[in-house]
Amino acid sequence: MRVRFSRALLFASLSACGIEEQRYVIENEAVALTKDTAPAFVDEDDNALYLVERRFEFPVEPVQGSTLQDLTEGAQGMMLPFPRLPWVVQDDFAITLDYVLANLTDRQITAGVVINGANEFHEYAPRPEDFNQWERRIELAPKQRITGSISELEMAEIAIDLATVVNGAPNSNQVVQFQSQSGRDGRIQRYIPKVIPALIALRAGVLATEAADVVLELSVRIQDRGDRLVRRGEQRWEQPMPMLFVPLVPVEEQ
Image 1 (cartoon, one colour):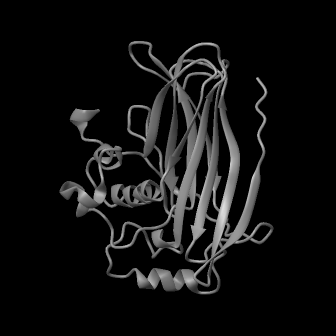
Image 2 (cartoon, helix red, strand yellow; image 1 turned 180 degrees about the horizontal axis):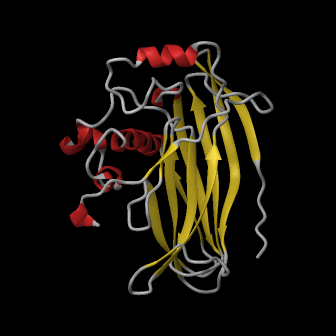
């Protein structure tokens, strides 16, 4: 199967009330399953799950001079689950994501979209039996294409949930499941850190319950409120790879 897609990484300036806002765009990036994809997971009843993922990093501005030292000193006494204040905080970015999920086969299949986030310090790495930070599974008719969006609020929830689970929340699945809203759940609120790092990367995946030709096409848009992104061709921050965070789940749930 040949998958064709175009790629565009660009910036645009939006004028509103005399204020310019910078917007970063990733358009029409594809993640594809094929009939030859090996299963990512097979349970004890021989039910298979097929998953292909890609990681997308955002071009963050390099940290200058003594900034990291200042951020480290600024975190003293705040009881944060990371060694310093983040260079990019949640309010710096407003992220939205649009997707197209296409069934290229001549039969009905169950397929879906999976999103997990990463900040400067941690990347969410669920096991097959865990909840992803954002997931939708859909019955697709033969040759059907469906479109959808992940809102700014939903992407902000991914950032909050990631910071919350690494801050000691005892049940990661409870925190990240779609029905859970951290700001309204009393079981979760006390684990939300005082400072939330922004998402600076995400891992997007397409999944299916059988090996089949399925394509996920993504467009990511970031409103750069904190002026933390660089333009195309400019030097990016060479970020260290974040620590993978495997969900914590009570023994009785595993």
